[in-house]
Image 1 (cartoon, rainbow, N blue to C red):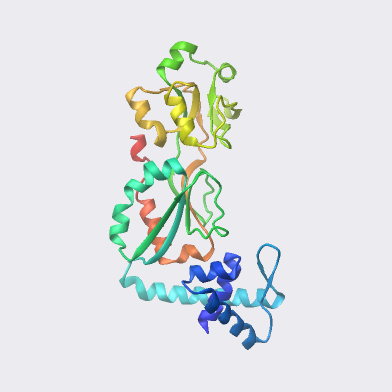
Image 2 (tube, rainbow, N blue to C red):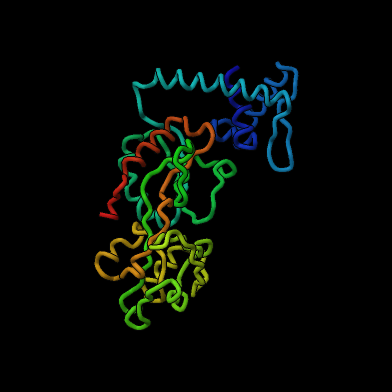
Length: 296
C-alpha cells in the first residue's frame, strides 16, 4: 500500500509516470499498475495529464498532501533506525558547469566514491540551465546568486571574480583606469555571461560587456583571455593559478564581482531527503569552505 502512494507522489513530483518509475527503479508497467490499484481502491481518479505534465485532480491534491505526510513520517523513521549505516547506494545524478566540474569537482570525487562503493554516480557537465525535475537530476552544482535560508540551496564556497588580462595585452593597449575606459577595450565573455555585476568604490554596478568573440563556452572565453585577446571577468577558481604566477594581471582592482554570487548545490523536492543526496551534499560541503584552496 505504501508503495502505491509513493509512486503517486513521485509521479506528480517528476511530472511523468515514466520518470517516477526510473527514480524508484521500477518498470513503467509496474508503476502504472500500482497507480491504477490506488485509484481503484479509493474509487477516484487522482491524476490528469495536461499538455506538458501530470496534474492532480481535486481528490489527488488531498491525497497528495496526506501521502506526503505519511511518506515523510516513514522517511524520518527509517533515517532514525538506519543511523547505524551511512553508506549511500543507488544512482546519483549530478550536473555541474563544464569548467568547474572538470577542474574543481571531478578530480576530488575519489574519496566519496570509495566511501560509497554501492553508489553509481552520473556526472553531466553543461553550461546550459538544468531543470532538475524535467531532467531527472538529483543535485545541480551551480554558480550564481545564493539565497541564504532556502532549503534547496546548499552553499559550498564563495565565488570571487576579478577583471583580468595578460601582461602582453595591457602592454600593447594600456590598462583601463575606469569603467568608461574599459568600454574602449576588447571584452571577452560567453553568452549569458555578458552582464558583469560588479562592486566598486561607489557600490554595485552592472557593466554590459560586448564580447569580441561570440561563444557559448566559458572555457573558450578563458582561453581567449589567456591568449591575450582582451579583458574578462573570471572566477578565481578558474584563473587563480594564472594570477599568482603572473600570466594574468588584475585590471581595475578596485572592482570585483558581486559578493552574493557563490558556488552552491541545488536539490529538488523529496530528493534532498534521500540518503545518497544527503551524503553527497555533506561531502561537497567539506571540499571547499569559506577560503577554498584556489583563494589561498
